[in-house]
Structures are given as C-alpha cells and as structure tokens.
Amino acid sequence: MAWEEVARSLTDLDKNREKPEALGDILVLDVSYGSFAGLFTTSLLSEMGAFVVRIEPPEGDIARKMAPYGLKVGDSSIAYLVEGRNKYHITLNIEHSKGREIFEELVAKVDVVVETFPTGKLDALDLGWEKLKGINPRLVLCSIKTYGEKGYLADEKQTPDTLDYDTVDQARSGFAWTVGIPEDYDEFPEHTRVPTKMGNWMAHYAGGAMAALAVMGALLFREVSGEGQHIDISPAEALMALNNYALHYYHLTGKVIGRVANFEPAAYAYNYFQAKDGMVFIAGYADPNWKALCDIIGRPDLVEKYPSLKDRTNPKNFIPMTQEIEKFTKQHTREEIQKIWQNYKGPGVTVAGEVLKPKETLEFDHWYERKALIKVKDKHYGELLVQGLPAKMSGTPPRLKWLCRPVGADNEFIYRQMLGYDQTYLERLRKEGVI
Image 1 (cartoon, helix red, strand yellow):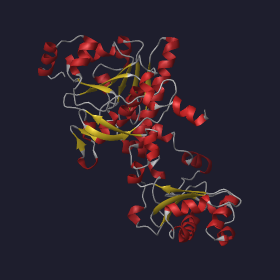
Image 2: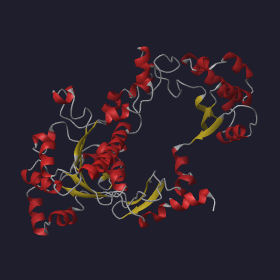
Image 3: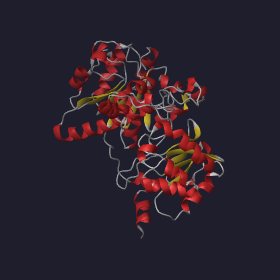
Image 4: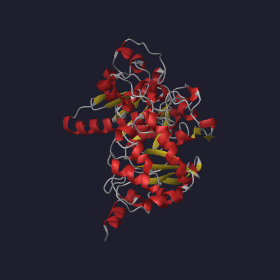
C-alpha cells in the first residue's frame, strides 16, 4: 500500500469516534466572559476530549452578540456558534453569594478553570487563586487578560476595569504597526497609510492557542508532581511572540521597521500581483530564481536593474518592481499564470499560485476531503458550514461532537450530574437569580 494511502487510513476523521481521546478524563470549567481567547482555549481542549462546562451569566455571555453586521443564528453570533462547540452550557451568577458557593463546589470537582475577568475581579469576589487552590490543590487555573496578572499596569490598577479586547491586544503587541500601507507610499490616499489591525481576532486566537498549550503542559506536570498551578496568559504577549523580526530589527538597529503592505522585507519577489481575474502569489527572490521569473515574463532588463537581493529588498523599489511585473500578469488569468509557471523548464526555481476568493475557498474540494470545512446539521441552529479539525492524528484524534448550545441548555444535566441538584432546587435557584 502506498504511503499516502496508509496516512489517509490512519488519520481518517470518519473513524475518530472509534479511537480514544487524549484528554478524555479531564474536566474543565470555562468561566471566560466576552473573550474569544478564553473560548478558543476551551474549544481546543474540548476537541482533544476534555469535558468542558461553559458557565455564562443568566442573561448569556456578551460574546454571543459579537456578530458582523448583527448577523446571528438563533441566540448566538456566527462566531460564538463555532467556539461554543463540544461544550455543555450552564448559567451561574457568581456575583450572587449563592452563585459563588456553587462555583466553589464545581471547582472542587474539576481539573481546569479558564477565566478572562479583569485583573483582580476574582480576588474581589473571594474566588482568587489562593482560595481556589485551597479548595482543589490539583487545580490548573488559566487566567487570560490583556495586561496579565502581574506587572505594573496590573498591580497598580492603571488600566480600566474592562474586558480584554482583541484590538487592544493587537495594538499593545506592536503587531498592528507592522500591518498596512506604508506612510511614505504617496500613491495611496493619506487616510489609508495607517497601522491596520488584522481582519480576524488574531490576538485572541493566538492567546487562546498559547493558553491551551500551557494548560496541557500543566496537566502533564501534574501527573508527575500531583500539583496544580496558576497560568497567566496575555494575548498581547502571545501575539508578540509571533512577530517574527520587527522587534529584533529595532533591537539591532535602533530603528522601527516600516510597514511594507503586502511586501516581504526579507525577500522580493514574494508577494501578490494583479492578474486579469484576481490576484496571484509569485515567489522568486534568490538571484537565480529572480532571473527565472524575469525570463518567464520576458524582462531580462529587470535582472540588470535589480541585480541583487539588497536591491530587491529596498522598500523604494517594491512598487516599481511590482508595476513592471504586473505589465505581464495583468494580461493573463490566474489559471494561465499558473500554467505558464508550471511549464517553465529553465534554471532557477520560481512559483506562482492563485489567491483564492472567499467563495472559491468554500468551493475547493480539497478542504472538504480533508474535512477542514464541514457541513453540520445542528438541532438548535440548523445546517451550518464550519471549520473542521486541523490536527489529523492516528491515535487520539480531535473530534467535533456538536456545535453550540442555547444559554443554559445543560443546566439540569450538569447540575444533577456534578452536584446532585434536583429539579425543585434548580427552579428555586432560577427564581433567586442564581442560575
């Protein structure tokens, strides 16, 4: 059997329910609020098999309202529907004294708590780390917030008592400064030449990924030591860790690296070009590869004009070089450009590929074959197209079990199973505003 067939068989996602789950015996409380960093953390843990109980206030998490142009399905934004996956949803008012007592009961029974309240909020409610580890010494508490748990901004309370916002994290990380059109590109209107946030909530997703990794590391250490620990995650720091060389450039030169739009400061050509029907990505930056690119488009004069990598990575040359190459690419469709590049047999290596439009991405069969995109029929929210599971694993594969639940949908099941509450008691708690 060919290796490709073996790999396909070993990681067949249709068979993942037949295999064990890596975190199948781990119980997690997600008490994050208004934060996709916290939501993404527990989404990743739940995919790996953790039993995740999502705690919302009785009126529901404000994250359910975070929707583009107000677009919602039922009671939830489309973003929350995805990050509510695999989780049991209950309501609990921890501002209420009885709610805090119930929260402590739950903490005693779980392995992990993920929270995103403003710094000091849990301490003010007498639910801080010292209190919680006294209740459960094996607990892993993961706190996620812009400025973290420690540091002068957190310690001296110089920040407003607000939620962690992705756009603030992006700005604080230094990442937003590196994205967008450079200030000295006079070809563009002045109002467009500004630092630009990334389109998605990248800081929250980076923070959530780092948090999930840290939680799994803490759980592994607990297996050896028997001890839990407190994890302090700042999404701004998580995104900063992904900032490949902007910070190091400043350290070495004392200068802030300028924005370069779609260009790559370390290589040219390595960017997008306009085709007749959209955009293409073209790379050919080492000297022999640059020559190959110029041979393909019939422009040996560009090799003479920009002979070295230093010439080609001079920011002043990015737009003129792109304009010259686009004299060729604008005459061809994306498919034609790909074929032209594939048919090149000369020396050097240069590549070209389509930049897919969103509609084309959703029509790309490859993603459905790999289940990177999945159509799900949900009993609460109908048929939805959602992201699949990036990790393909032969032994303990992740799973998408269900999408989101409505606010408080699992109150009876979870409170009965974990704390033994009966229907009469739950109804009393509901009337008192506790759940």
